[in-house]
Figure 1 (spheres, rainbow, N blue to C red):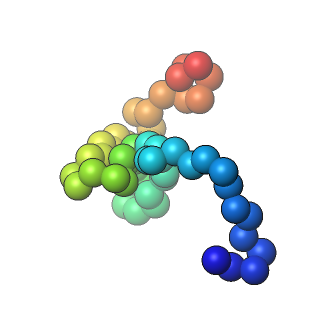
Figure 2 (cartoon, rainbow, N blue to C red; figure 1 turned 135 degrees about the vertical axis):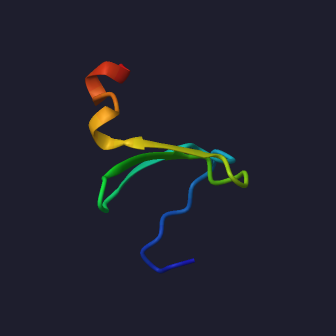
Figure 3 (tube, rainbow, N blue to C red; figure 1 turned 90 degrees about the horizontal axis):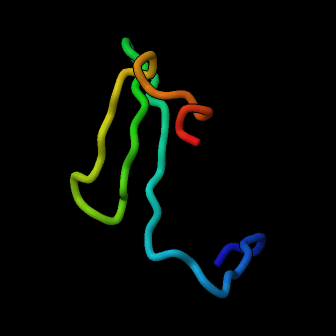
Length: 54
């Protein structure tokens, strides 16, 4: 473990993550990294804002 790392008593097995991929068309990507091919993407301009998610 890294010297500046923090040990945790409990860690979720896996969590979904979101990211913005910059390119010719910026894409919002949601991925579930614990399973192969478990992701979806949408042009960032079509993605819901954070306020619309809540």
